[in-house]
Length: 192
Image 1 (cartoon, rainbow, N blue to C red):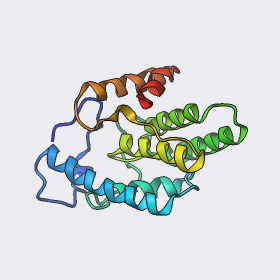
Image 2 (cartoon, rainbow, N blue to C red):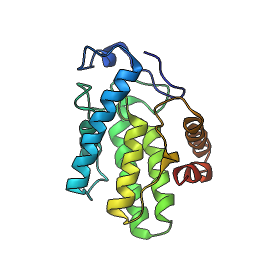
Image 3 (tube, rainbow, N blue to C red):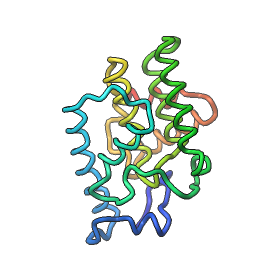
């Protein structure tokens, strides 16, 4: 399958985790994943989780988003990728991130938007799962804003970021700027 720019390719073992053997194109895969994400959004609307800054919820949300498509949904990657640290450090890095964000919320030193965009960027940087990290991290940031900090969700450019487009390029540019410590472009994109 072809990947859009900035997407992390699956290795052979991960690709074999596809539950729907009739899928032959990226478009079909995107559609099935999106249908699964819609189910996850319905679950979120019903449950309105607030205790989200922990490994258990991070895994559970990914599982809810992709369990109908991938047999490894909700399981951390077991291989190194072109992004993220070593796979064996995911749990430790995720705990440090969640503890830091919890502290930042409690201290009220930054705006909700600043905290959420930082959380999103760092979660993408950890890249805990074989696939779906960007979509998962965007939804995690939105849940953090809406359920935990009582703020409005981000718009994320108002388009599907899984497809190649100028909007996806703006998102990736924002992530690269955040990699260098400049969160302004990513925040502006998230609220665009």
